[in-house]
Length: 174
Image (tube, rainbow, N blue to C red; front, side, top):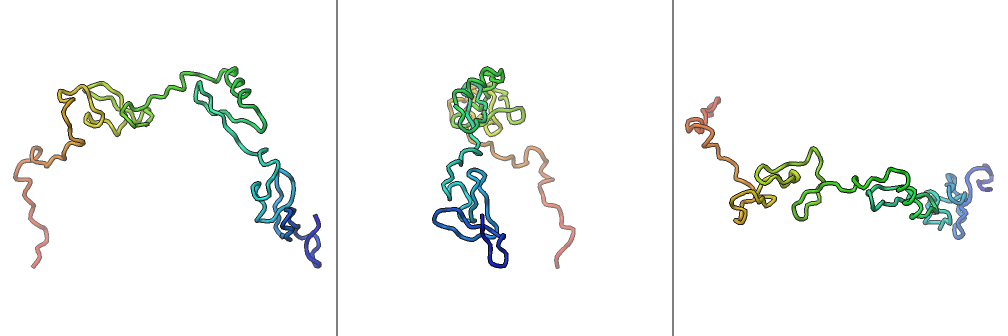
């Protein structure tokens, strides 16, 4: 691991990549192969590290309960899944997460984003809470085309006509 300059012989190290051999004053030591590399060759991919997989994290998804199980280096997927099923933490009831029944909506229904339609009793997400958005079958006009959103009220039914007149300005312009 010799390197450095004539004045400082112990400072830095030469890159151990075959084509490089650059003197680097802040070298990187690979935690896979324990070799020293410069900035350009410090990644596993850059110096083609043979032990690049030893620190990587791989996850296997259980088909029964949709739980993710971490797989260690050189561990068999089938063995990990078998251990998971025998451990007792695999619960098939966890797999079925309620989703919004509207076509092309993938929203998971939780306590905070679930709405039950008062007309048809269907549980939908908040985006489809209006009967026209989830094609409600509880309405009399289920076959007819419904507006996407109801128009905003213009205020005439909530106020009397005198309140619609604009009040006199407090400051008059001359």
